[in-house]
Image (cartoon, rainbow, N blue to C red; front, side, top):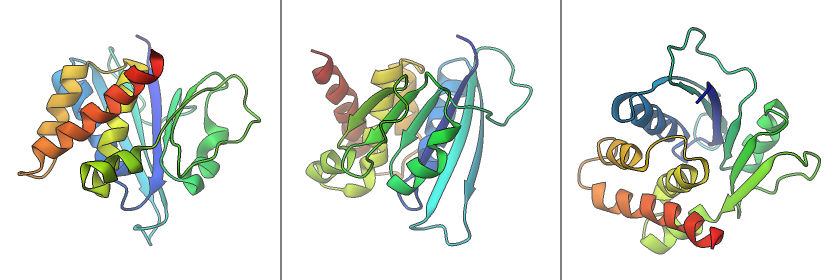
Length: 181
């Protein structure tokens, strides 16, 4: 695996930063890889566009900032519009199908969508939509080991919510597996 650059974007309150933290933790602690994470959000935070950037590699990372992400996870239209042009020409776009409508101008990007908010609502808590998205990301990319991601989710969410969050992760993972059939 070469160095992979990843951007997660959405609006404040969707768990963008937590998602990046979980991916980085899964990679560096549970999957024997190297990872760096940076984040950005405006002073208004909740409700406005924010993003987190990760680099994941099997070798030490010397420069911690992304240049052109290979993968973008978009959980809001504003975040998608703000960062879509920064993606590599043949990257992967993973997006929330009820909140993001990607443009048709980039034909070489592989696009994968999931109604993560609806799935989270069906599980009883809209707030876990980012964890649904992490399960989907894991299945789509294979970048991080499945068990490493599960362990990172379990050890990163608030105590008492582990079971619900693991169910959310599984739901996102299985959603992709069902789509492939």
